[in-house]
Length: 473
Ligand code: SAM
Ligand code: SF4
Image (cartoon, rainbow, N blue to C red):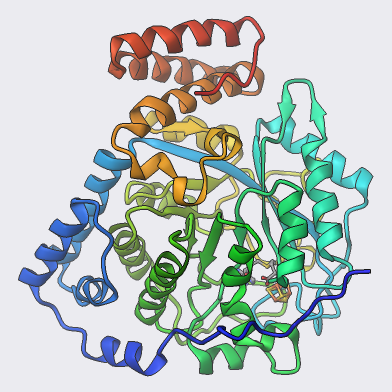
């Protein structure tokens, strides 16, 4: 039987220098000329250094901050195009041996209703998500001996094996506690997409305050070293994250960029995605945080991350309210969730939209709109909703993330794939209004393609109309 080997590899080190980053935060000041230089570098799609990121963080005046926003919007428009990829989180189980003070799953919270989905329940949850039109899921687990690598691998395979009508999940990402190398190998073999682990805070003293020392998660270095172990186990698709609100957001942005550059330098592969959730109300959590990130700071941090890591996807979750999500999408967010239910087993329950029971979920959702509603709305803003999973399935991951690296790749592959997967959604799951909006959007997008590609996409769209599915480029 598998038991986790918690010995750290000899090269494990805390490569975040807290004192240095704190000095950088203390020294921040506004230098318009330097900011503009850094923006220009970023618009050339070059990754920024930690120092250059600090220069952007020093901008405070509304005019200069607006220049940063505009640069992020421009980078998004010119480089990434107008696609937004959709996913949904699926909570598999909330037993947890840890006691993270911000989390509704923490072990000391006796009012939490604990449950792990049975195979049958997992199948029903997956079918319910397929019925909404989802093709990409992220499975989420508490940390518990119940959720061994074999268990996680089994749940991933169960989800892949669940098909209903035209419904299928084509990519399963996971967000689970860090494993040892052997554990990472076991989950990798089940065909996971991204392995997501958030450091929560990179600031060691703060980390210790929120994660009690007598818990597994209390070990900062075990967590910080997780992606090194994952990489050695063959996982080259990783998602970093910070839980914003625990410590100074500017420190955390510098630390995230440090982590991304560390992975790039050590393994030749940077993270695939960055997540930047803000802490939300949870069962038994009074939110009077010293480092709470307000909306103005949140917008700055997203725009600056966009400029700092040009080859990395940005994920904004439904933790954030609808209004803010609308605005921040334009700064270069590449993935969002919608129609999210955090209660274990919540997707198959028929409940009023927006209804939440805090003692059954990890935290409160900010954007409770349905998937169909969000899709309809973003299409009005000329974004193409995408359910594409093509790169991952063709092995285009790790150093081969071509989406951003190869000039013209987005136009030749990503946009056509977004159109194809959107058309499937429109035929199979959309409301009549959303379908009408989507068909009009597809017609507009086809006009923008070069003629040869347009003909090919049109002929594949005709096949989708005739019932074929999954015709990706
Ligand atoms: N248990 C695993 C772990 O902690 O890494 C994985 C799943 S955990 C449920 C997923 C993430 O939820 C955590 O990494 C944390 O950042 C986030 N989270 C926990 N409590 C939160 C809260 N009150 N508001 C927003 N996000 C929260
Ligand atoms: Fe457990 Fe993860 Fe919640 Fe911490 S954040 S209590 S490890 S589920």
